[in-house]
Image (tube, rainbow, N blue to C red):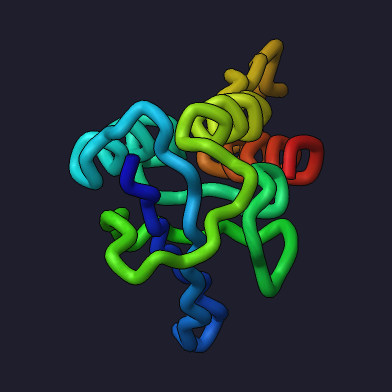
Length: 129
C-alpha cells in the first residue's frame, strides 16, 4: 500500500498562493493517476473544494481551494487517519450544497434577467457558503 500526497493551493485576491500538501492512506492501492481522477470527479468544476468541510488543512475558511496534483508518497510522510475513500465521501457531501439547483419561482416584470441571475447567485452563495 502506497500512501498518496494531495497538493492543493489557495489563491487570495492578489493571486498570492498558499501551498498545502497532505498525506492520506490508500488501503485500496490506487495509483496516483487513478486517485486524482476519482477526486476530480468530486470537485467543483473538477478542481475546487472547501478543505474545512472535508477535514483538510486550510489558511482561510470559506474560500475555495484548488487541487494541484496527487502523487504517490515516496518520502514516507505520516498520513492522516483519512483514507482515499473517506476523502471522496467527504468531498461528495461537502459539495451537495453548492451543487443544489436554484429554484426560480417568478422574476417580477421589468427586472433585467442579468440582475435577477446575479441576485440569485448572491443568495445561493449567502445561504450555502
